[in-house]
Image (cartoon, rainbow, N blue to C red; front, side):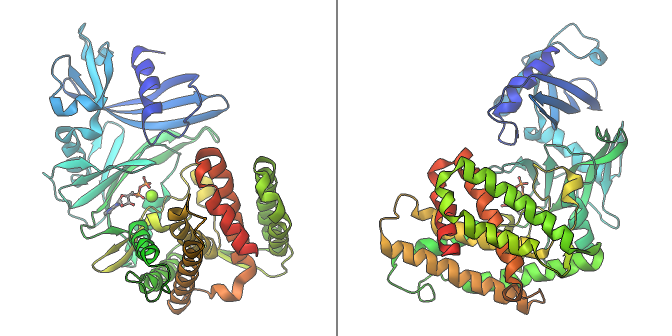
Length: 464
Ligand SMILES: Nc1ncnc2c1ncn2[C@@H]1O[C@H](COP(=O)(O)OP(=O)(O)O)[C@@H](O)[C@H]1O
Ligand SMILES: [Mg+2]
């Protein structure tokens, strides 16, 4: 490895969005080094290929480069290290490299290049057709994100930089752009993107690959998870009340969120491909759910008493004799992916599960999978504040009542908003919900053991 590669191999694992946490890096190789601004200060777009045991991932790094001693104070926290200057600089003096997402002087160029539809070397900056992009806005990194890095430009735009790269158009850009063609009021409008060709190791072919997406910054947005958690907290303050009587009842919002979800599903089915999953396809889907259940029961013995009920639910899905309508869906749907604005609910992050290859995420699925995801999220919102307090029966009852009330409101909104009635598709919905809960049990067991009671309690309640 070069010195720069060594530096990145130390820096990457410390980043929140690094996907391979907990395993040592065997090798890191700079797969592509695109010079966006030559000389010093310089800007480069790197694609770093990271091998950790059997996994190989590619990450995008926007690398700033300055002379030693020329790094302003406000960028010191973003410094990656000092290494020899790259050959194109033709200089014996070392340079300081840093995460340029934090350097507003650099990121301003990204916005200008998008506005100008510019090709900078092999990197393509594009404005969405018919869009006039405002430039000259200063960017700030949004904190608190997990899998990507987003920059807010002057409260006007968000530029979401996809950190882990999969060959192809990112579904976030694909679905958001498709929904924009029918003027969906439930998305943040896309204004442009950045892409570059990347070789798909699976096929050996070169594929245009999304590096970043520019969309409207929603100034009045409040996170769905925060709103729901506030409502739960209000109820816990007076658990003797029914959720409908407590101060911060969420049911009206849950119902409107259901309706917004249905509208988005309808629009996606209108503008993108749809199909049906045959009974054999559903049997295959059920088999993957059963396999996950086996793994989970092996790892988490507390799940064993419920295994039979869970298994039967998957079997019921597998034994169907009717086709299941499928379409493009959100794919990673929960309260943290929706925001409430002055104009109603907006859905964000149509990326799907970032850990799954893009080719998988583009597959059609039942919209009930998204419904199940949101219902599980209501359950989490209701129960996570109970962790360590389950000895208080009034709170446990309140949590269940909150989850039930909002579940019903969401489903009613979904149906009234033109979605298929979840009540009439219990077999499919239950299988998705159970599968998600089993996934959560595994996830919590591996990453947050103190939260494992949340999905385990829900499984107890769901299968009871
Ligand atoms: N267009 C936007 N307007 C306002 N806030 C946004 C916007 N896009 C993202 N956010 C905020 O950033 C958070 C993370 O964005 P998201 O696209 O879900 O990124 P990630 O893939 O890292 O989860 C959102 O939950 C929301 O709070
Ligand atoms: Mg997200």
